[in-house]
Image 1 (tube, helix red, strand yellow):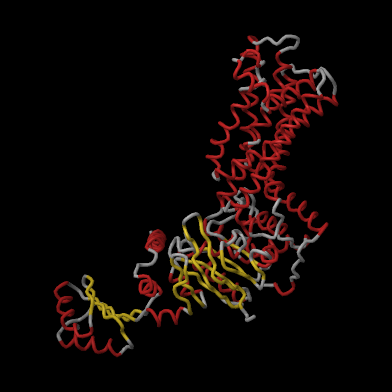
Image 2 (tube, rainbow over the protein chains, first blue to last red; image 1 turned 120 degrees about the vertical axis):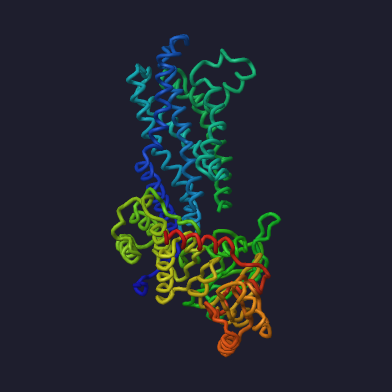
Length: 269
Length: 325
């Protein structure tokens, strides 16, 4: 062994500590993205589902749904973008629970790396993945007749909101993944947590057709609020209040789930 | 301070009402291989997790290279390597990518990472497989890569939690060789095992752990001398001769097991000759005859009154059988 010539790095302090954390996060995120390239099923299946929804609602159910003042495809697509981001965050739960299960997290915890790197690297890799998937859904949206009524800046802002929402939900699903600790179970556990928010919402149909008790929930829950914000951004109207409401939800979710997932991470193993 | 690289005093860890560590004391000297021996659930893995800063103890103190594992966890992590029970390598990365990732996360200088990864792959016989995805590796290859990952940052202390569990005999021998080389290179190794033979072959000192406590400690030779004794085993061709032999040797204090007669507490080869003469004199020829040195299994039995490791032994036997067929 040539250990004799190795000079051990000093512990990181101050700015070095910060730069070191950024490096660790990049290393972990890079590794997670490599996994998505090596196991494309992880991305492909989460893309097929929203495509099926687009085709189903655009061509099968859409004809029977009429929204005053707007074509159904324009109403539908913002809901699809949000749905894509929401279901995409299940990847966070699956990824983390896989690493927990294989003992990879345990190895990470014994290394002199930044404690934040595992969770940040995971959620950021899933954000990068969502950029790819959402971009694809936008292309498909245009292909089936979706049109932006406002302009490019509003579309960019809307997509940024979609991606931010997906990122925020990654922290919720990170907690789920760490609690459940097994990839298949994480997937099974994530769906019932997410489905009510995606379907009892204004994503596909206006909430006005729902019974009163459900309408209250469907109108104010985070998925509907964010879809509404995305819609007003791309279809026109005063988007400010909707966007603020959505951001407030996201801040609230982060405030609860970032500490919760960090706490779970520290106790895992 | 003396030269203890690992110092543990009164370590306690509870999981709810289960006491995993119940006041463990250990001292491990530099450059030695220390074996933590005990059955499943004895607390071996919990001890390793505390020492590698993965979990915090509920009581007592532990330090590695003079750094407290709780208060100076970061300093400890720079200096230790861990290979856990399940090969914690990423199946979707190549062998090389796995080691380079660990190199980055252990802050190896950037220009050194690639060389270090290749050097370890070479040393562990994985060079030809370095660009293959690890999910295509055999169990033994994964273990070797896992061990390589634990060594990337030149750790001074290496923790190996059941390094050979689940390996076939060939893989086990290879890993033993690597562990010996590690210690010869100056590293201190703490390994846990439920295989008595493994502790016996590898460890300079052994602590026997049972129910969260260290119940005996010493060199394998000391432990065997203190708690075990040699046994004379005489095998006879059939039951009738075995019964006669049992009567002839009764004065030595014998135990009968089928066609085999065991004389316990043998203190030297003299008895071998005496017993053989007695039997030959009566016209009996044993089919086998041997003095078996005390094993750590005997030590464990003497200490706990329970047989050690039925699981491990079974797995070992199974592996042996499989490799034969």
